[in-house]
Every structure is written in C-alpha cells, then in structure tokens.
Length: 213
Ligand code: SF4
Image (cartoon, rainbow, N blue to C red; front, side, top):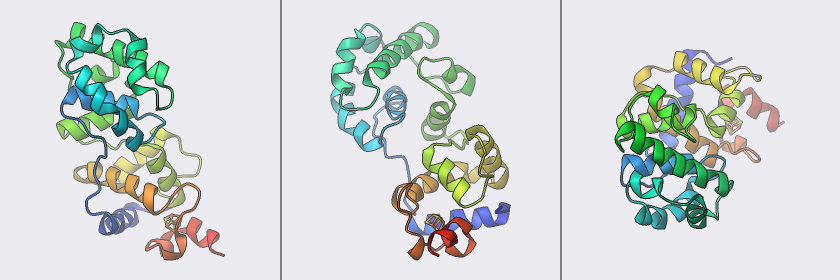
C-alpha cells in the first residue's frame, strides 16, 4: 500500500501531467451547476455539457423547473443515460429548493443531501466547486485509480476510499487532487487500456508492473 508520502508524490506527478485539471461541467450559477452534477451520474461531463445550454436557457431559476412537467424536462436531456429518472430528480430537487431553501443552493452537506437526486458525491462536488469547501469526491476514476495504485485496499468501498484519501492527503489539496485523479483516469490510467508503458508512476505501481509483464 502507498503511504501518505507516496500518495502525495503520485498526486504531484499527476499534477505535472495535468496542471490545469478542473471540473469539465459548464454552468453559469450554483443552481445550474447542481443540476449538471445530478445529470452527470453514470454519464460523461461531455454528454452533459451538450444538453445543458438549452436546458439552462429554458429553466433559468429553480421556480421555472419546479413548475415543469418531468416529461417536458426529459425532452431536453434524452441523449443522456437514465434521463427519465434524472428529469424527475431535477424537478423534485427544484421544488425542494424553492420550498425549503428560498431557491438558494444550500452550503452544507446535510442540506444538500436532503435534496432529491443528491447523494454524497454530488454534495461533495457542489461544495468543493461552488463554495470552496474541502471535499474528496470519489467517482469511478478516483475509486479505480486509488485501487490500482494501492492507495486503498482492493476491496475498499467508495466511502472507505474517501476516508483513506482524506487521511493520506492534506486537506488543502483535496479539491485539486480529486481533479487530478479524474484527469488521470480519463487520459492516462483508463479503465480498459491504461498507458502503463509510458506511465511516470510505473515504478511505484504494482498493477502497472503486472500489466506490462
Ligand atoms: Fe495506471 Fe498503469 Fe500508471 Fe499504474 S502504471 S497508474 S495502472 S497507467
């Protein structure tokens, strides 16, 4: 297992390759960012960014979507996975924002997670990106890379991975480390064909060493 120092070294190397790693979701307000993160579950940010310009133009504020029929909302997002359920979440979440939070996206974990369609990861991403609250959101890339690099045990759950990362990485680096790991997962250590032969972390990565044998 990589210790704290080695984990931070790995993250520094990722940062050298992807110095500008940041969120790819495009949104012009906290509300629209929240919607974009809900939409991004089990689909790519690229696919989300394709549908959101028209969606956001039509539903500018929570009240606009709170009064919408989910079927109408679904028409705007039908090119992305699970769009029917996501349309329901968006409408329900907007209603709750209007009714419980005066149409303002809340800034605490507990309040965010009380909204329809908002799980732990979505809350983490919104808090980190919009409000600068340190969080280490664990998505599919972060989880896979943490295991491949043996930062966490092979059988770690998402929650365990989050806790271990938070213990091995200084709090001030959580947000940027999350972005670096996502870029690493997208462009260097992909799920199916990681580029182990040219990887600067090969020396400390047993998984990579196994793969190139
Ligand atoms: Fe991923 Fe391979 Fe690099 Fe290990 S050596 S981090 S498996 S790309």
